[in-house]
Length: 264
Image 1 (cartoon, rainbow, N blue to C red):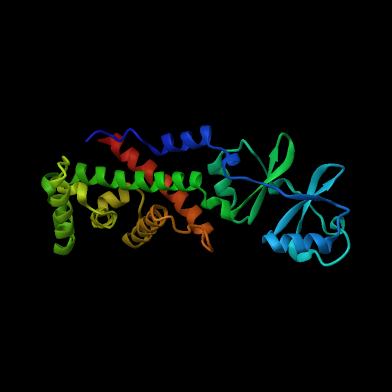
Image 2: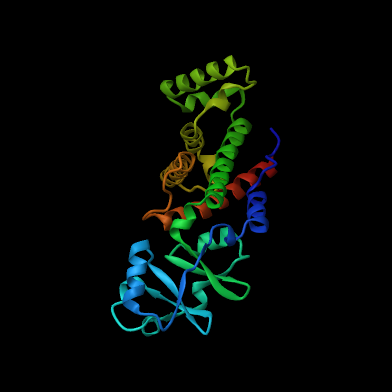
């Protein structure tokens, strides 16, 4: 089987070059610093805003948190932007995703001025989901390639239970009824490919997985992420750091799989 034409680098370049943070950013609502803090609090509560921008002489110079707006003016509660709070609208989406591992929000500079905001909720949008789904799909494709390369004559069968083999055979029969030119290995599920790879110590270590336990956690988490993406489920609620870790680990795993391919 030839090496896959789609690689982790191809995917990264596609998003780095073509999809920037502007595709998920929202407009930052802002008010003059002389506005009443209590009135802006009411405005924010009605719209469930956590922060709004604060303007001085027409430019956004900072922001306020809704919970801080008890009395006085917005200017009394303004928090100035630090460089770590800011990103440019042209910054690659993937870099912003990683930057939000520990940040609830980032403010977006547009034409040199702050005018947008990205929150963790924005990471649920289609561009981020497409990138993550691409990563998990490439992982599964690489696992299949490795199985094909290292288990001739379907000798991978010994690694699966009779129940899992029967499930694959059933899928094969259904797909052949639709005249799809495939074999049974194409009908293995993500979990089957995971188990086959992890039971081969040499292969497991060749792709940088030191222990079967660590590999099981990584690949099982990637499978759950893939399923959540496929079914439009929440992927970041209370779990963004782990999703960021998974994305980074998936990219590293793909590189090692591709190196293994190059050695063949």
